Length: 169
Image (cartoon, rainbow, N blue to C red; front, top):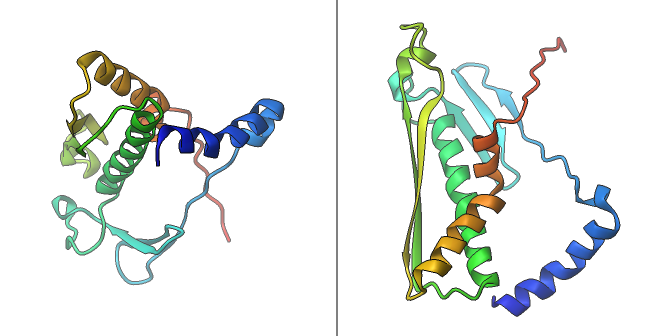
């Protein structure tokens, strides 16, 4: 897909959202069910069923997906798609590229071993390795716009309010 095709694809969508701002507001959903026998949760991804379980550092077998890994994978996926879309729109040629994310966790926090140890990622690093002849000013713009428009990055960075509830069924 080139920049013209991307613009043509997105133009009617952008016009619709300009004309009707409420049309741009969509609620994404995720669902899962608790496993009856194992410490695991079956998550419906929309494309397949993913089974998340404990990380081996907390007693898991390593056979199930770790939700921390899934968060980093979502960041890589979103950042990669966003970067590719921005590069296409700006006509920045990419010969190839890779995206990597890594995050530091202190599992003493999640296991309640040390009250001063944080629960969750202490730091996340996102890296793009691109093979391109584009000038540095274009790459700076590419990175800036990728950060600006990547939904997962902005969500992690901004930390929106999260409401939690528990109900009997």
